[in-house]
Picture 1: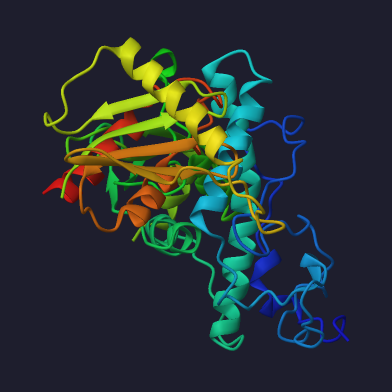
Picture 2: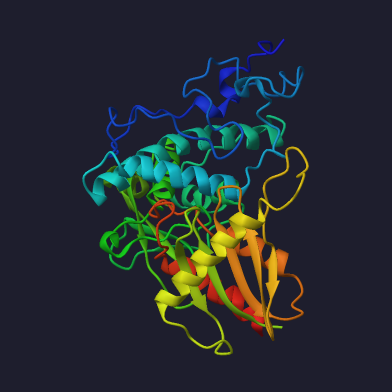
Length: 256
Length: 136
């Protein structure tokens, strides 16, 4: 029943992006860990068979306790995870990772890798849901830089953290650098960095999500997280997006 | 209606965190506070054995609160054996809720080793904010 109605390829924007054009700094072998899902269906396999994601056709068999892969993808209500549960799990992820790395940079790299895989799944899910919300009419996938960044700033953040990011700015230093700001990042609000690791920002995970989403939309970028405290918001975090030259070239060609 | 101080006692009876939020109670040397916390831990262990027939399945809860002249204490035992102790003025309402709030901002920090002293600046600041709203 759930395998019926494979949608025609052109109406399925979810798989139209390619993931093998990645020029990201994330290396494959490091990504052996399964990403841990923040929401219901983020832990789906990375390459589901084309017929499987059709949540509209698979509405039947919604018994509780069924396999997470069989749950309907378009059900959003009641699938949020409590922040406390997340905090405990993320704390474990960080301490697990910490015991397997030598340096702060390695630890951030590991968190970014996890976030990257999450981001790839978030993107697929969000595109599918937005297509379904418009009843498969006129499914959209942004291709210009600014709408893509706004998509990350608003939709991705809203899905992951419950609210859009607090700011999206272009860096004054370079045309190809953008900053996504969050005053009180919810994922890491319980984490207190010890003084000897002051370089570390556990928001590297969020940076990974952003990188994964951008890469999926064919906007390769190097994404890093930096804590920029202010008096009012000691945990204010800036996600710095340094776009690949290829993206800038493409934007120039596309023009206005 | 003020909260004078907060102690966190680990399951072995060691004091892992203590902060004073008012000047009402005389400041004690750290060693004395450590001894007091250890004594409280012992009393708690004894009182938890006092119930003649604890209901089956119920956790072995001991001392929950105590009162002295002008001030009192409230003990909150977590399932892992950590105890939170609030020293407060007599007639303070909503202590249970307050202790739950404190428990909520406790832990979840990957850089903290369980049962060891708490050196988290963030835990401290968030407690300060919480206590400031209570004591206001």
